[in-house]
Image (cartoon, rainbow, N blue to C red; front, top):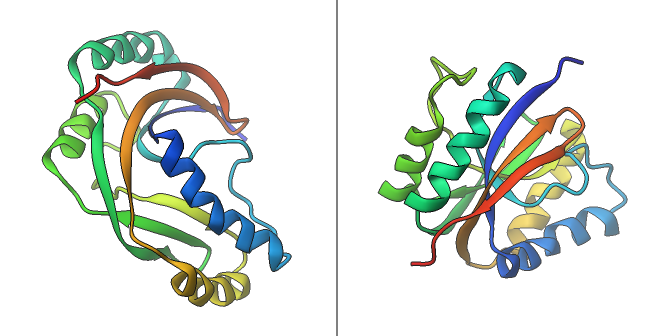
Length: 167
């Protein structure tokens, strides 16, 4: 599989902890989750060719001194096909501005920003079994996007992480 880079906005530690209940439910039900192991809960801002690594490292330095942490409130669940369950954040100006900062040179030239936090990637039959269980245990979830990070995929290797300014 070809290597590529991702810039992601990571949720704060408290929100990471509260979202673990979905992981626990997946494990309790014996389902195999195919999302990258060890990757923090996040919103993907964009993907890039590996040739832009130097540019993206510099971009994170700019983001670090110019962007504040962003409050997000998750409003619903969503599906990509029948293989992916995600939490859908309410869009806000700060999140759109962060996305706009990161879209130059991306692989997503013609795509629309579909902000989401992936909870499960698996087979359609398991997705259909898990979704009602996720809804059953759901509680209002809100948090802060605290870090912006650069990862290399498909191996999910952290290259660089910066902490956003406190509000």
